[in-house]
Amino acid sequence: MIDGEYVYPSRSTLNYTVHYQRLPSGLYQGLVLLNIALPGNKEPKGTFLVLSEDSSLVKDLFFKHLENKTEVPLHPVWSHWLWKTSSEKDWLTSLNTLIGNYQGYLVEIYEDEIKEVITRAIADKNQEVIECFKKGETDGRCSLFEGLP
Image 1 (cartoon, helix red, strand yellow):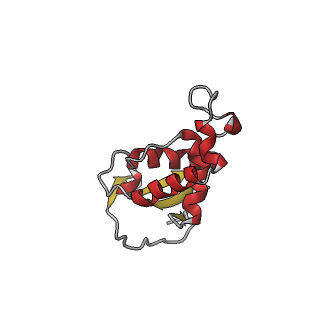
Image 2 (cartoon, rainbow, N blue to C red; image 1 turned 45 degrees about the vertical axis):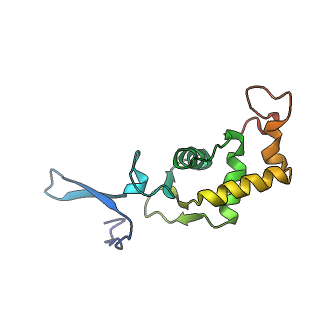
């Protein structure tokens, strides 16, 4: 029950885990989590879930999950560019949350397409991507992106 109304979740095609606990009142409190939202999940590599109450962390969490789920070498300063590219290619699906101020995204990645997009960006000399390859940058960090997560 949320705000006095019963909410019935739809059945998911993805695997999920149900956790519940009996409250002192005799009622039960439950939580349904998609397995792709759990750390170390064994779901297919091409899908993951990003949830955050803090909107400033969403892109950083996205990059960390992406880096963990793909064999493609990624540079941290590409985080914003990868987010933008994934949005444009419809690899991100914004999710509605029932309570709180959480932001959620279902991410479907296609490793071959990620390789192709990065390769094309380098070949096209996309400044957001190639800045890190310029001589003189220290520790692989781009001065262009200072202050970005």
